[in-house]
Length: 131
Image (cartoon, rainbow, N blue to C red; front, side, top):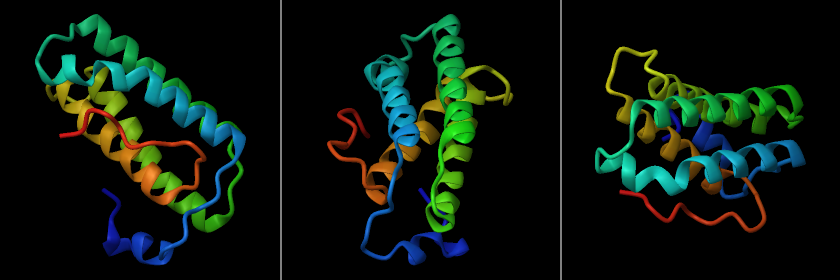
């Protein structure tokens, strides 16, 4: 979840932040890559090769968003926090954090959930598999 200690969530208030096509495309792709596998990850049925592939796909979309997304400064600050969470999850999936790969799902799910909560993305629905 976003860090309210940094004032981010307080600054958002009740209005949702604007998105642009690059952000919507990148976040939709991340969701499509991760969401179907959440049950397998949580049940321990996801292999190292799968983690690496999903982690790489998430990292590629984070890079795409960083390179192409143009938001106002307030939205960009919130997005930066989400991108940090996504990259953390991707790194964990890739085995780069010295932790169990399945621990990468939590920061990614949190980022996708917070994205839907704070950003105005027409048609975005909460993740189907959230625990």
